[in-house]
Length: 232
Image 1 (cartoon, one colour):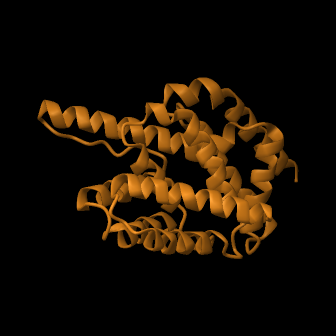
Image 2: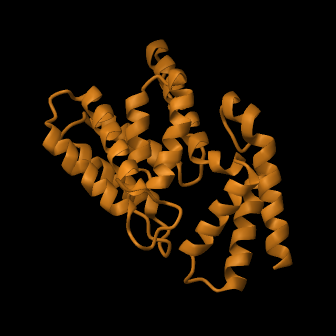
């Protein structure tokens, strides 16, 4: 079996497990159809980084922090769908992905669960937590739990920034490949702007777990890429 099929099958089984944990009435054939649609989209030719390998990397992180999550199955589904729509020439991929997730899952999840997944995916556009306000003590606790889960999801999505330089360099190269339609000069200027904006954040990682483990390495990697871009 090829490495790709191994990834596809492993992630497919994981997808169904998380979906069935929320709705155990879903038939395997329907879960398989949902997964095949997801896999097909992550295998589109315009992708070099936002592929099934990216999803696999995110779930390697997910397994490390799952015990800290209040709603792990919701977070897992948000991870599966967060880049399901990805076109490098468009600026609304997160919105389209969020809408696609709701459309795909609305028959199997409650409206509240779908709304939560929609909100989580939208947060990946700017990697800021959308605050949940409520006056009652019970709902205030629930809001804190949702915000904690959101922090982990956003940190998982940015975990590549704090990887070893070799892994980070591969990621940066793949991002450049996805933007092959952009000239070198324009890409350099745009990428430097994005990276500089990231460095301006008081903290790249929102959870203590990721901040303590990856913050320093992530900032080092970003600064190194900026220097390379300036020198190119």
